[in-house]
Image 1 (tube, rainbow, N blue to C red):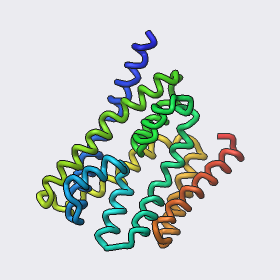
Image 2 (cartoon, rainbow, N blue to C red):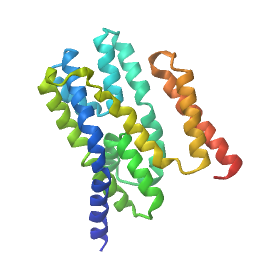
Image 3 (spheres, helix red, strand yellow):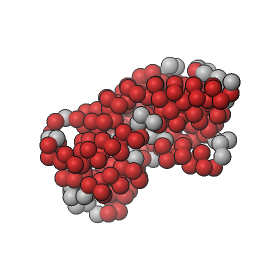
Image 4 (cartoon, rainbow, N blue to C red):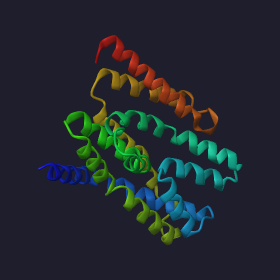
Length: 232
């Protein structure tokens, strides 16, 4: 029965994450197009997606490389955009932290916006064993990460056949809104989101995208304070 429950968790994760394909495929293809236009070869573009696997940071890095920004600026900016992964990691550790090292390494590699959002929602609404939680995580990963690699490769191969001005980059904010909406279940969540949004706009001028980090920290502080005062 336990093995059956684990497999059931895996397939439930794969099913829950399938709608993300509508975002992952066009976004990855667009990255492939832009990366090759920036001068990367098809192999370099695919390697970029496999090694980094973080859409927003990849776009940031390629954009700065196209502008011939210094290497240190490219690295710092990409790191700043990806610092939210540290928050994701801290948040998901109570659920997956007891896993063996190699499984935690897999979780760390495949921890992206979509896998984090889907898994946290599932973990909070369902009582699951550690094995079931890991199986669900890997199930969510299946329709997101491999298609990300393949769509990046397709975009790099097709190159100019996909116009960069088609507006496909709009899928990124749409994806974030779709992930954020179901998570706003308490007053603390809503105030945290509102505070982070306001701070991100207020500090949009800060170089290297550090305004996003300020907004993230401000949102967490606001949410924690609202939760402390209201208990919800």
